Image (cartoon, rainbow, N blue to C red; front, side, top):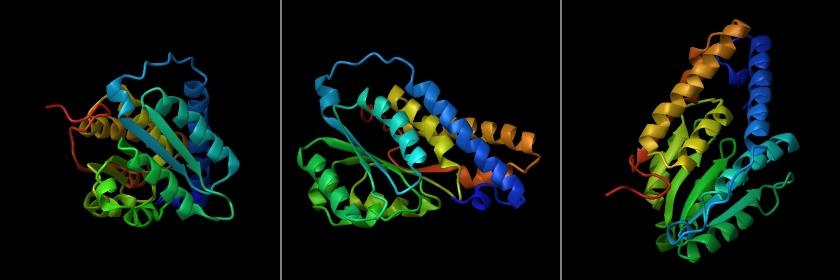
Length: 239
């Protein structure tokens, strides 16, 4: 996401200001949330049957650090197994490494939730090359990529139970902070999206008011939508 893309309808100077403040705000949240002490949860039989796989694309090192520092403690507190992949700067072996790690998780028989922490990305195409029966074990796919709501039907057709993606050139890193914490807490997806979209919009309106920028274009572009199992929660779908 470029600075200009970050705030459609704003001047380049304003867009740069929005982007800078978003980055600073995100990493302030990362520091506050990742430094807080966490009590480890026992690995119950139910928890042991679910795994998380998070993938960070080729971005600046401080962005890679921030994504990992925020994501891993939360994921490890709620999943029996967690895999994390940071793609290399030269792009080498990305598809092979992705398929190897995801394939091993699916082959183990657990249900897998995917967190695609990347700009517009090819992960749906890479996943298509895995065994169809194994792909049925993919539960949630959350995708931060700009415009990657358009992948919703593809992911559901591959076997995912639910898919969450963003409408346009989004401030998805901010939405992700609210989304992941609510997901780990055990809220159902439809409720998570409603709350996280509202919290993100409120934050962006306040930020743009400080900068004298129009918030609505960015709020709309950042809006996340859901496809598939609306009642899905980290513990499954209530009967």
